[in-house]
Structures are given as C-alpha cells and as structure tokens.
Image (cartoon, rainbow, N blue to C red; front, side):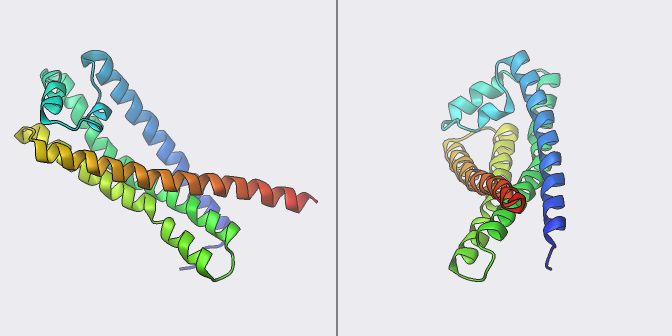
Length: 180
C-alpha cells in the first residue's frame, strides 16, 4: 500500500503524539512508584542479577505498590506499538526525503526503519521476562536474558530516533528549499 506524503506525515504526527502521551502517563506512574518505594518499574531494566531483582521486588510488597508496578509493566505494552509506529513512520519519512529513488540506499533505509519495530518486540520480551520473575521468582538466567533484551530494545529505539531526527531535519531542509 502506497501512502501519500501527506498521509505519511499525518500518521507520523498522530502516532508520535500518542506515544508521547503514553510516555508521560508511564513516567508519572513510575515516578509515583519510585517516590513510594525507592524503585520504579524502569529500574528493573538494567539489573543483571537475580538478587538485584529480588531486592526491588521486596520493596513492592504492599498491594498498592505491587498494583502500581503491574500497571507500569502492563501499560508499557500499550506504549510499545505506539513508539514503534511513530519511529517507523519517522524512518520512512527520512527514507522518502533522502532516498526517493529505488536503489541500495532506499533498501537499507527501509530495512533500518524496521529497527524500532524489532526494539518493541524485544521490549515485549523484556517485560514478559520481568513478569515471570515477579510472579515465579527471579533466577540468574532470566535476569541475564532480560538485560540482553533491554540492550536490543534500546538499540532499536536508538536507530529509530536517529532516523526520525533525520526526518525532522529533512522536513526543515525541504521547507527552506521551497521558500527559495
């Protein structure tokens, strides 16, 4: 399916706005949890050991705290497709601006546009592994796999952010060229 430039930019805009709104809600919930217990759900991301996970879990023993931690992890599943779509559309806008004709550069940018989607899939794996550790107890293998999924997630998000930044720069360059 071929999208017009206007439709592509519209999808990029609304998915970006929705992703930013979801990120705000997620950060507010996480900040509230961190203020109450000293740890937020985001603190689970870089913990490479099972005892580190257990230490965070021990701070979430009261039902309101564990519910808020569960909300943060669950709401992240809504955030994943939003940021993946926003960064994907941003990458496609960059591809259209900097590689408008068929060729190697266009194929490479199209492949790179899938990085944020892969990042969101790794984010889902990360959250799933965290939920398993929270419900069945942490172990070193799951903690290590979670850190690896987190690293892959951030790599995909980074590629998407770089391409989205290139798309924003490309939009400004096009506007300047049209003014002349």
